[in-house]
Amino acid sequence: MSALLLLLVAALLAPPRVHVPARDVDFCFADEDDPYLYMATKTAYHFVHGGKTRFQTVPDCRPVQIWMLAAHGTRCPTMQEIHSIRSLTDLKEQIVQNHEGRKEGHLCGRDLDNLKKWKLDDYLLPQRAEVLTPQGVEDMKLLARRLQSNFPELLLPNIYNITSSNYKFRATEARDSMTSFMEGLFGSRSAVLPEEASLNDTLLTAYKTCGMWNNEEKEGSFENIERIRFDNGPEFQNLLRNISRRLGFLYNISADKIDAMYDACRYQKAWSVTELSPWCAVFSKDELRILEYREDLDYYYKAGYGRDINTRLGCPLLHDMMSHFWNVASDEMSNEPAGIFYFSDIVSLQNLLATMGINEDQMRLTAYNYKEMARRQWRTSMISPFAANLIAVFYKCNYDNNRNKVMFYLAEKPVRYSGCQVGLCDWEFLKSKFGQLASNCKLDVCWKASGATSSFPDFIAILLTSFILVRFGYQQL
Image 1 (cartoon, rainbow, N blue to C red):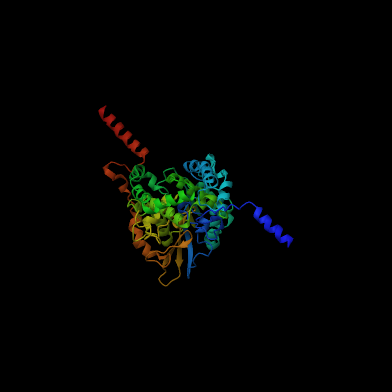
Image 2: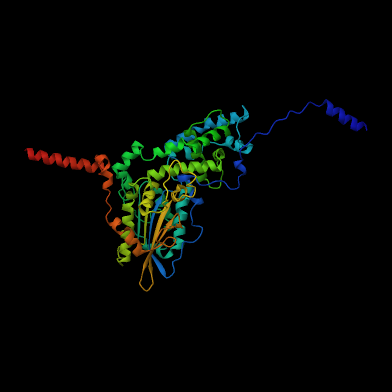
């Protein structure tokens, strides 16, 4: 009885408890079992490629040539992106202060703790700008090995048979990706001497030599209209408000800060595929889908179906593919390599897709049809992530009419192509579809803009001018 009395007295004398309400949180990214992984052009190839299953086996056919165009593997951000991400150290301190000092903000405790621990990675040093990461090297090596295991008759050569005549390699800025792929294929980064490629390579980067394309890019007339409209529209404006509130700000943070946090999230996820980036906790899944669409809009007009000129700039690459296949179909095999491997960038890859009509939507992407285009074909996460690639395999078949076939793969997945059976096309169909276009690649559109833009590279224009002046000078003597 005395013990009970003592407990009652202690309870009466104890100071009253202060109730601290739990912080209202939107979600807890650290506890997410199924995070959203599709980050537009900075998506890790690890999450989207179809190489976990074998390539298609074509009955009664044997592969005789493989043609590939690939973009660079996972790499470090650009110099501008590095500066933007590095500036997030100050924003991080503000977010922590908002939560712990002002008691504002709606990040859960674990997400806030992870953000507090975030430090600048070595990949964010200015001297590392656009350098291939170890994951990028692995991207290309594994792609090569998967191709080799599926096409051993083409890509398991005798060590003495690896020559520039049997395997053709060429790269522009993606040279490190090319040598990593070569190492995965042959065990050596210099097994084959690649073709020389200039900075303005008219095959691998035709858009860089196109005056109209470059002028429109500088003027910002081709993509910014829809992008600006989308940024001013309800989806993105709600995103700004919700993220600003979630981080504890009483005002909307800038779109530039949104871009920097998005880049910090997706770059880190791409170069460390098994880890969570603390900056990804800033975004809900729906918000990541909005940012993905926002970048899809950019590239739709920059390199895809949004502009007619883009559907023409892939013609040199299509011509190259068709020419090689034409020789193989005609049994002119003496000078034909077993594999042709090109390494460029996602703009050239998207130009080729647009020229070939791959992943074209019936409706155009605009600032106003985000919800209607939820199932769109033009998703940069799927068609042009890091290490994106288009692969075409030519087959000789043992049918009565000896028909040849071509199989297309995008990111190692069969292309659903009108007129073909899940990526498998009759060669006669492709000849009728692309023969005339591929044999007559006229890029005259490059110099018809406003009647003033020249399609010639500057050095050719200078040579022509010099020739005219010299000729005129001689006539005056």
